[in-house]
Structures are given as structure tokens and as C-alpha cells.
Length: 134
Ligand code: T46
Image (cartoon, rainbow, N blue to C red):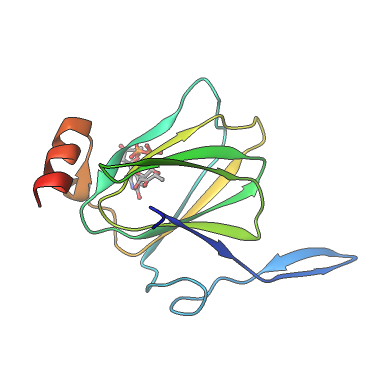
């Protein structure tokens, strides 16, 4: 079973461009409490390196591309995000890293909870211990 899920969104394309609609409990599998986005990304500076205890998220690469590394404590997977017509669903207790941002990369993230630093596990050893010992 996969650690994360790639969600395919319907893209409504015509000569004016592309439009993708994201709706809570429809193509996004939770109620959305927070949206944040990242710009000015640089391949020299990977991001993430943490897991969340409760938070569920969907990340969408609106422009450019980047590589996600997901780890559930027993296996690792890599996923490239390079289209606004796909979202990466990441559930709770999954270690995530973001690498290899293109210069034009724009990432938007839909989150199931408000920001809470105490939901983060930023130490890999601690994550590995918690996920493997229940
Ligand atoms: C995640 C990946 C995909 C806030 O104050 N509010 C917020 O909503 C967020 C997301 C962050 N912050 C603060 C916390 C830090 O002081 O912004 C600073 C940078 O956050 P962080 O280092 O956690 O950023 P990333 O890119 O490593 O991780 C982010 C999210 O934090 C995280 O939930 O899953 O993107």
C-alpha cells in the first residue's frame, strides 16, 4: 500500500487557459481549515523534514516542479509534482521532505487544521520511534 495518494483533478481547459476547482469533502478528502503557499523556492534549500501527528494535507504544484520524499517509518517513496491537475494527499504520521524545486516552482497546500507547532515531529528518530512503537 502506498504511503501517499496522488489525486487527479479535473482540469477545465479552453483557449483562455486551465481552471481547476478544489472542494472540501469532494475532491479534497477533508474540511479545509488553512491554505498556505510557497514561492521563491530554491533547489539548494530543501524543506519539510517533519511529520504531523494529526494534520492531513493536499499539496499542489501550481507552477514548475518539485520532488516529495515520503516515509512512513518502514518505507520511503518519491513523488514528483509538476502539474496543477494533481494533488498529493499526505495523511498523519508521514515524514515528508521537499527537494529539487525548479526556479519557478509555486506550491500551494490545503490543510485540515489550523497551524499548530505542537502537531509537528521535527526529529526523525522521534518520528521513527513513535510510528513503530505505536
Ligand atoms: C508541511 C510542508 C509541506 C506558520 O506560522 N503557519 C503555517 O501555516 C505554516 C505552514 C508555517 N508557519 C511557520 C512555521 C515556521 O516558523 O512558518 C515557518 C516555516 O514553516 P516550516 O519550516 O514548517 O515550512 P516547511 O516548508 O518545512 O513545511 C511546510 C509546513 O509547515 C508543513 O506542515 O507539511 O510545508
